[in-house]
Amino acid sequence: MYERKAHQVTIFEDATLFGGVRLNPENRWVRMSQLIPWAVFEERYAALFPNPREGKPAKSARMAIGSLIIKKRYGFSDEDTVEEIRENPCLQYFLGFAEYINARPFDPSVMTWFRERITTEMLAEVNDYIIGHKKIETDEEETPPPDDVPGGDAGGKDDNSPGEEEKTSNEGTLILDATCCPQNIRFPTDVSLLNESRELLEGMIDTAHQAGATGGQKPRTYRNLARRDWLSFVRDRKPNRKKVRKALRQQLGYVKRDLGYLGTILATNPDVLSAKQLEYLAVIRKLYGQQREMYENNTHRVDDRIVSLHQPWVRPIVRGKAAVPVECGAKVALSLSEGYARVEEICRDAFNEGKTLIDSMERYRKRTGKYPERGLVDRIYRTRENLAWCKERGIRLNGPKLGRPPRDRQAYLESLELERQESGERNEIEGCIGVCKRRYGLDLVMMRLKHSSEVDIHVSILTRNLFKRLKSLFCLVLDWVRRSGWDRKTEDSVLLGCLVA
Image 1 (cartoon, rainbow, N blue to C red):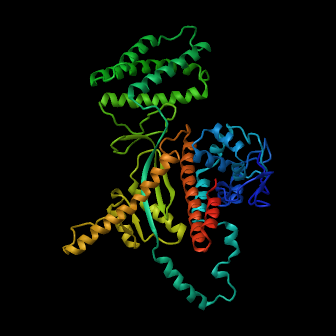
Image 2 (cartoon, helix red, strand yellow; image 1 turned 180 degrees about the vertical axis):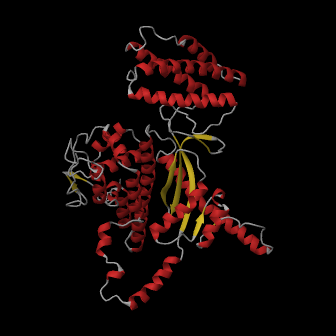
Image 3 (spheres, helix red, strand yellow; image 1 turned 135 degrees about the vertical axis):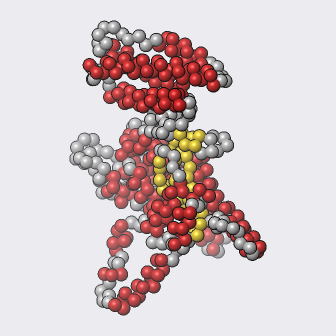
């Protein structure tokens, strides 16, 4: 059940009192509550409930999105986030409470439902509102389009023709890059994955035997011998290639035997295992096929390689970094425009980020009405197809031109200097990725479900943009204070009020 909130707090009634608690109007959470059009997303969130009049009333969209932003900002767990909201009246105001309550607003487990219900499209839309690439629909409806103006005739079309020419001109800079968001999983090795599969299969055989599906005679799994072989291997800190192959052969044999037992049991008793166990069984069968193929072909590469039994959708991403050459997680393509980041694509499999350039440029044009004047990208984006596509639309990509360098020495040096400057400007997106990883949790995604992980990535980018927007507003206030002509004491008091959080 979901009830639309007809009235939510948007501004203080007396500018300082909030349910008997005196707050600072310049608090960062109070100011940020006015940067997001909550009423717009109330309608989007309500549409996610198929039967809005059945069941217990759900929490509002403002509480759902706001609590995820608070969690991501502070890096808390779900339990600590709820406690922080209970103790902080400014956070309760940010979530739309009408008055301060000294009790937990909701159970920590409800945040799991928030991540499950909220879609990535909704978070991307919230991000566009914060950045300013999307305006509130009510404001757009008040301004009639030029075609609807009374008295529009041929002369009006002539007046609009310069506007069409302006739309064709390019404007702005778009910076593109990609990164990997590692998932919180155990470091995967082939032998450890097979050993874990064997232990799960043995548990399934025990379940089937207890349910009487084995005819009173429990299959022989050799679990003690398999455990001894596994411990003998894992205690060797530096096993050579021969020992690794031997351990793989042993564990593959144990897993194959257990899969055969379960196949026979399920043929006569298909309902003896739970739905969760059947899911694990399907993953283990696929994992066994991959490991058998790699063992027989003596290789370490296979398509859609499984690196976690509990999160089989996670894939290894080869990044070529010095510290971590391979990362297990989602690969995310990001764009940066005017200092604000957007998620262009999230993919679990490794992909060539150079193929996302055209789509990113088209989405930029859809948001702003124009193509960017230039694109600052890495070398992998500078393919012949992308260069030709950008040249047709007047978009200049950074980096050297194809072919031989110019004979004019001065022109060659100028091109090198421009390339060096634009390479420095492109580092802005590297810094943005670094901030999101160090401060907003992109360095290790803790969510266990696929959709929840994607929501967590979007919330990290959204929270970073939200606080950058707040900082830019403070810079405008600072400039206004400096130009006001007040004395130093008055300036300090005004700025101190803006900095209080």
